[in-house]
Length: 258
Ligand SMILES: Nc1ncnc2c1ncn2[C@@H]1O[C@H](COP(=O)(O)OP(=O)(O)OP(=O)(O)O)[C@@H](O)[C@H]1O
Ligand SMILES: [Mg+2]
Image (cartoon, rainbow, N blue to C red; front, side, top):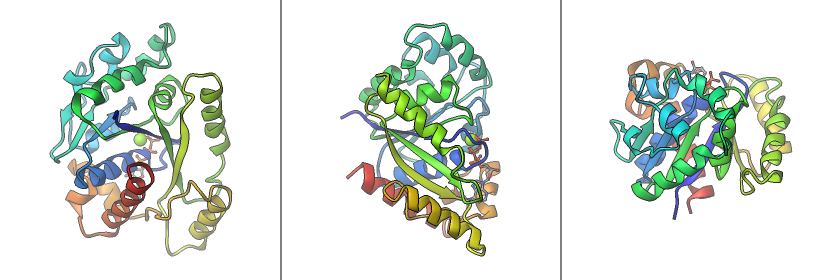
């Protein structure tokens, strides 16, 4: 069985994609699910959040373009069952270079398929950049499911139609006929405001099947942890952020892995 691949995407910036990739991945790894994170964002926030240095020549850039084996780029994290293929700044150039290649949409899919066979991975989470350029497109073409993170704020739903349209196009064109919108995770949920609840309800009205019951609360701990190179489970294991990501991971496990 190849790994189940989930692209965590939203073309909107700063909506909790990276925070979710890392902490969801860490929680799944703690359930004993061998999980690989792939940092497809040239910003490399997922990489540095795990305390891994972004160094030229160590990320996904070269093997992705060359179609080479990705295994030399897989880095073990300080948590069991959790690996990452880091990003590097040069990845920004890949966008342009990819466009001149054959099969440029499915390069990542092919590479990851081989990797998951060799490593016995069960889950691959891809952290996408805040654009719908070729790096995100490659991620979506490699994915079985799209997981969208939405900030619990006014106009959260705006822009959702754009990304769901892209999913539709990828299906129709045959680039990835099997991709599905797997879930919507609400992030930065503020219990004290009515707005967060109203936004949650609004999303629930339109996407009752996709929205996860767990909303990730806004807590400063989640934003502090990356600067120590730690997941929330290492930084504040008993806090509300850790509890929420654990609950979200249980939902994800139930939805995709059982
Ligand atoms: N639940 C939360 N509570 C408080 N701060 C959060 C929460 N989730 C994320 N943040 C912070 O908000 C900022 C944006 O989050 P994050 O980097 O995860 O979003 P992103 O969608 O990956 O951003 P980008 O589009 O730039 O890649 C970061 O500083 C992060 O630490
Ligand atoms: Mg990010």
